[in-house]
Length: 263
Image 1 (cartoon, rainbow, N blue to C red):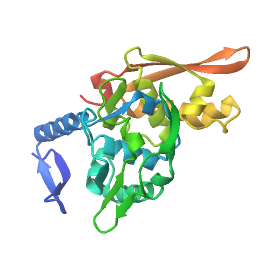
Image 2: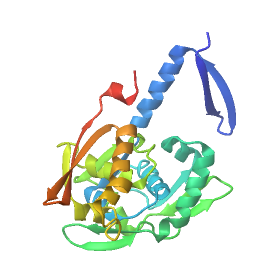
Image 3: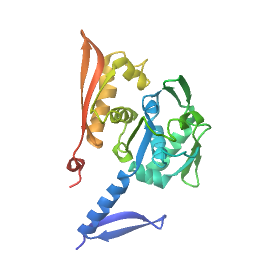
Image 4: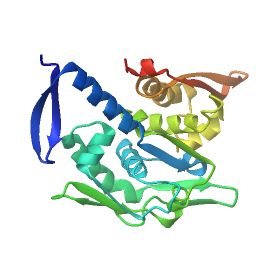
């Protein structure tokens, strides 16, 4: 009895169709789910709360690279990621992975980040020099800036970790940012963010002067994606002073195993 077909990358460049029994398909699915659950992103909380603006592709590239290192150790400055690895991590086909890596590598050097810690507030680049996309080899490489390394390497405390698979299917960088800010408070399952701080964190201080527009184009879509694709169920309300919205109250909880589509 044929249970289904799996299209796999066999011997790297040769694609074949394999036929398996239903039981084998279930085992393969659970093994894939298990190994993907081990792929985690870890950042210092100061980096989670930093102010920056990255495109979705740039966010994905950074997260994919962070998921490949041990944040407890001193991580290498130079990073290389292949199209095939990127496609697996972000759950997409290789054609889209090629396009995303090229686009992210092209602009990442131009992006800066503002980080505030107890000692100082400073702005610096994510990477030391322009990222390079190796056209004929299907991979991208770059070098972390020394300033960023402080917040992603040799982390012993005050950090946030989460499974990469929980954000891999997001279609907006806003959803990724909000998810990280919530996961930072996963132990309490609630977070209140001043509206001004929220806009600063998302680098939107000069945009969306009307709350209804911010809510329509940023907050609601981000919450919808988190609820649909991640391990969290998120609810939020507004905190008002008179008629003016001054803060956002987020309450959230982790979904049960069965709610993630595993049965």
